[in-house]
Amino acid sequence: MFEGLQHVWETFFNLDLIGQTLPTLLRVGLPNTLLLAVLASVIGVVVGVVIAAGLMSSKVAVRLPCRTYVDVLRGLPHILTVYLVGQGLPLAGITLFGESTYGYAALAIGLLEGAYMAEIFRAGFQSVEKGQTEAARSLGLSHLETLRFVVFPTGARRVLPPLTGQFILVIKGTALVYLLGLTAGQREMFAIAQDTAIVNASLSPLVAAGLLFLAITVPLTYAVNAWERRLRDGRKDAPADSAADMDRALAHQGTG
Amino acid sequence: MTTQTTSQAPTTRGTPVTFDHVNKRFGRTQVLHDICLEVPGGQTTCVVGPSGSGKSTLLRCTNRLEEPDEGRVLLGDTDVTDRSADIDAVRARIGMVFQTFNLFPYRTALDNITLALRRVRKLPAEEAAERARTHLASVGLAGLEHRRPGQLSGGQQQRVAIARALAMEPEVMLFDEATSALDPELVKGVLSIMRDLAGQGMTMIVVTHEMRFAQEAAGQVVFLDHGRLIEKAGPDKFFGAPESPRLQAFLSAVT
Image (cartoon, chains in turn orange, brown):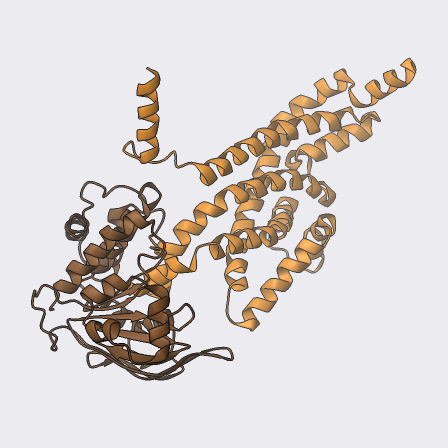
């Protein structure tokens, strides 16, 4: 019994190994993970906005390909998409990024995330009440002016929290690019941990990487939740003469 | 522009609106049957009828938020239903107030008004803000320029919406059940603004359930039922001596 525990401890929590892995994780892995996540998210947002616009099109010839894109990429296991894009494109002679695995990695995850973000954007923009569009059009604003000055500002605010939530998934998703074989300096956190784990025949480096992932994703998750709550209930960005502030001031007078 | 005239003359002071054999279907449901109606300039025309009678649809055909399937709608001499007409330019001549206010939520009261003044009327920022302030003051909201819609009561929001429409200096104002979503104590303020506006000789088409308002402010009252124009008369005759049995039944149910 005690020996078993000892074994588990040695396998997952070999402190020496964790200590050895952490510097590389922090120096090489963390920046690469974050850079990949940001690059992939930028690609994802661009793809997402374009596909979302297509999903809302009244033309079937536009809507159908976009719908297919979203359904296929959301329906496939991510690992498959990362392989198909990251290894498939160079194999097919589409060498957009030359020899840089990094570019293909970011593209693969970006295309994947684009499918999810497209749905987020579509839902956000379609949540803008029809009455707002009608009010804008009735004032004489054109279709494009209405989108730009009325639909977009409202939709974008509603989309920001779920989009940040998706960014957290992208951070975790970067672990998949280890499949594509990165050079030593390009490795993100999971790749470094995986390599070290194999060399030392211990899972402790992976635990170290896991702790770092948690250190990023858990606080971000709580921040997004708080943000969404604020958007839903309060208007804390209101000027001081707002009704709520007046209520608060009155309550304060009452107690003080 | 005749919006500032104080004359009550029921002649062609403001821009008239003409509905000429207007038909509208939603799928298989015919919501408007061959509507012919003259809305005289400078007068208020109230449209009443049960829910689903097509009164809102008729109103929304005026600025083509709904496209009539057949027939024409004229704003003065302009054929609103002409597909080649610049619909944005036509809409800028018609103010509309909605049941649910439809203010832009992330803009202040002032910015709700200046948006179209700047983009459609091409006014410089200063001038647009000045005009917006004047119109907010005229609906009793001076000092609330920088509130967001969420920080205003329903009645205040609806008054911003009215100011937003009026700031465009429209020739015709459309009210689509403008007080139906308001708490009873807030209805009065909005109605009194509408009454003033009617008194100033604005051409208005008002879809409403407020029979008192129709009685006091309307030049003519129109009764729609199941998409048909059943009866049309001056308010005294409309409420005092209704002809059709359906209007008699409707009036006895709502008053």
